[in-house]
Image 1: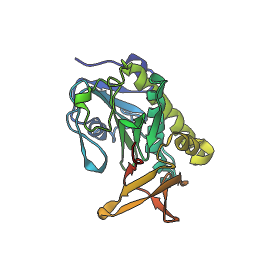
Image 2 (image 1 turned 60 degrees about the horizontal axis):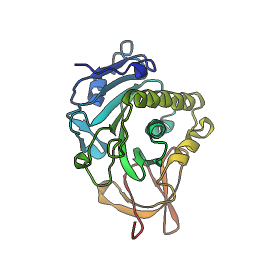
Image 3 (image 1 turned 120 degrees about the vertical axis):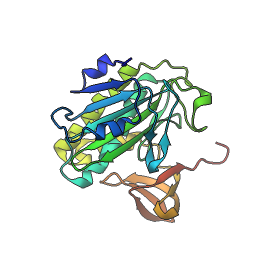
Image 4 (image 1 turned 90 degrees about the horizontal axis):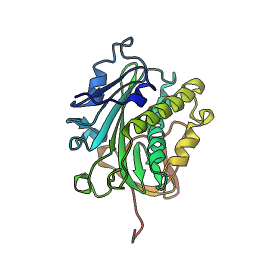
Amino acid sequence: MTVEFPLAQTTVPRLEALARTGSTNADLRAHVEDAVGWPHLSTIVTRDQTAGRGRLDRSWVAPEGSALAVSVLLRTLPVDPAVRGWVPLAAGVAMSEAVAAQLPEHDVTVKWPNDVLVDGRKICGILAEATADAVIVGAGVNTAMTTEQLPVPTATSFAVLDVDVDEDRLLADYLSALDRLLSRLVSTSDAGSSGLHAAVTDRCATIGQSVRVSLPAGRILEGVATALDPEGRLLVSVDGEQQTISAGDVVHVRPAGY
């Protein structure tokens, strides 16, 4: 039976709620060439994704009904390719706002580049995939996942936090915020004047943290994350020298006794 999200359906031109699918991102990729039938902000959502994929080509699979997988097709993008690096960061902020609205007593932040954390534990991961003329942003939110079902000890879910999440509201809030943040970025072509740079910085738990970054080819970099540059890349101070990170697996290094 197809699940329905009536509130979310009013926020985007097309929303397909599937009872089950392999990958919502892959489903949207199949419709990229159909700009008329699948316009900007078209969305696919499911509670049962069987072949999802995360960052660094990791698999992302959750027990049926325990998580919400949502993918959004973005066609209206900044003209400057360098500015498009802010798209997944905008998605992270949008999702953090949606999660925080239902967890007002918790600390909801973003770990660069695209994880949403609650009290320092991951509740959502985001993956952006670019095509020739569009970007598909996929997100997986741990909703009803139990403690035993969590993939790693550093993860969490609404259920673990004893919160009965309103999934329709969560999705509607996320889509509305993503539309708002992206529209401002497109209209200004600048993360600074659009307010996105400040919004991401304000939500980013990584800035100010000691971090360990796994870079391509197996190189490891350790230092203190200091800021985001104008293209959304992470600046890390290593022995007093600033290093610019455009891609990498970032770990927050916790102090002893944490």
